Length: 329
Image 1 (tube, rainbow, N blue to C red):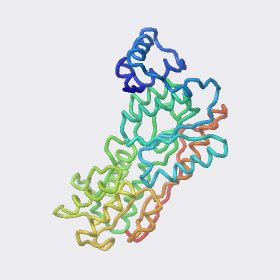
Image 2 (cartoon, rainbow, N blue to C red):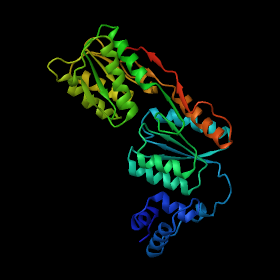
Image 3 (cartoon, rainbow, N blue to C red):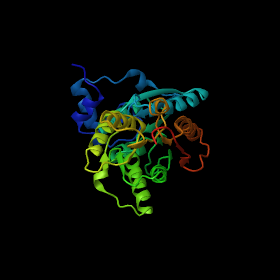
């Protein structure tokens, strides 16, 4: 049986990153911990990646990218921006899909560290405490896209303000009973910040926030579909729904049309992101436009500046967004 770095970490009772540091002799490790790792390596017969272990040059000209799901239409455009700038500066990229699984994020981070990447771009709105600690201790430049964490540069938009404007857009069109399908509530941006923007808009217009109109979604089509079904079963369904991602909004639209309602005559739909398909479905989707390509390009440029010890100015880059009106409202 062939054992991997994760097996060694479990056997020694340490993190995958600690095993990587012992194998590569890249960071100081306490002697007692090092001995535990070496004993586990010997007992399991683990053979580290010889290529990664032999890399002794200062730079590998490689960048790691961790993305929740490249199949989600938001991320390919961001990755394209990263890749174009990476090519300009002659960096190659390693792309990892984390599925928003914290264990996979830690494992991929350790594997990328073992490959001695020069820097990493992390996409995903939530950075776990354990991953944050690993990022800080690894000494690898990291830039976040779409989220924020202490002492790590980021590229994002003002999610709370953008969500508030999305709901105000619906209020100005005569809607007062507005539902919302959020992201995961543990998510500080797509879940918490966009929900707060929704609440702010209603409160500013002296409209009570009704908990039955708030549905926790996820990130994909199915959660939007199921969320809209739930909202439309209420005794008094909403006349408009703000959905915190376009993919979910397209799912919500399908559910509403299936139930015999018209869009926008019976129910208006407002999305968030402006992915390519949002302007091609029928009815086309009103949404908040995020500068996805620019987010990727700017994040990669920040990495190159850090690696070349250039000033990056503000560590948190907040980009503009736009309200886009289409047929669904």
